[in-house]
Length: 488
Image (tube, helix red, strand yellow):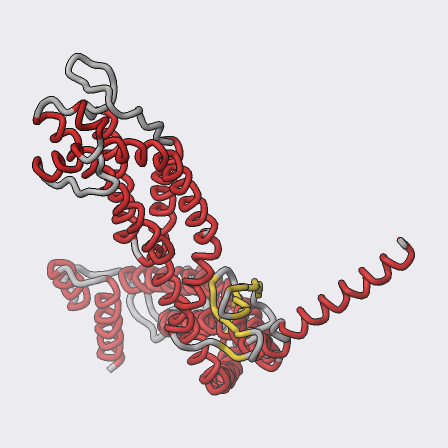
């Protein structure tokens, strides 16, 4: 038997799995709405209205498919219906309600016999008891009750228990009538809770009725009723638990809204991602071409490895974007967009800054050259200051070699300082020469006379507080003019 049973069981299992997989959402369908880099998870929802597949992407509920039709659920009403049915299925609503019905039946069974006997003793099983006269009539219809009837208090107690019996009957019937429909709202559960509490109140009223018991003014007429209050309390506990569970029903609406929003965003994205990708690759290619042209011009002026490295990184990023898009990984491609253009802007800014520094270096070099040219014009070959001048020229030549284009970016700041130092020392050399009164390259006196126009000009400029560079120029021009006048 076992040799036959196992193959049959195995075949049945395989058929079941095949049937199940036939209804599952295909990978091709999922691929149409998702991308390879996304973490996609699916879960099956089995409810009365059918089987559905819920697709979660990167932790967010995104897609809901009807497994039988393989169609995407797009309407909010259909989503809400699925989630509502799933909610009640997970809540075990039917099981809970049946349990409460069963416990209420146990309670009801515990009261029937004793209540019926008391009603029989008081005649209220055949006659109404709504006031003193009707209760009196009912009691007198039964000899045992008529003989026990002594005061009006007796009929009052009769009416009290009849009212309690009727109230319990009414609440029990209402509970059963609404039991299967109370899941619609917390208010409907509250109504059932109110009915059970009313039954409990009626039970307490019956237990304290004077027709029962042997107290001083009790009639000890009816047999005490053994109500199954444990079963009644179980019904109440079940209702409170159900109420707590139904409180989560509000999440269905929130869940529906979030799914609808996520789905719409995804559908919009799928519709535009192709065009957006084309625009992105167009922008990156344009940016690279512009940078490439500017980089070629930049490298003629400045040498900087970070510019070349940064441009290579941008080229690699652009290539990666293209590869990702062609592989349908559009979101990964779009994620690189901001970083690409941030780096592109930074690279442009770096080239602008370095070109400005290069221009500043060129100006410092030109200013230095003017000072040295002027100093060379003032100094004779055998001048005492000629050695200092030659040292400055050597320094200038070295700096000039280092600042040949393309100049290394890391040396620009140092070369600017070097040119400024040479120029400053050259100005000081010119000042020494002019103030010494010795012959210049054009000839002149070596001993200054305080009364000469030149010395008077020096004194006047000093009193006026003229900057040294301006003083040097003015005194040099004045000296040249004075020497020329002497020759004549």
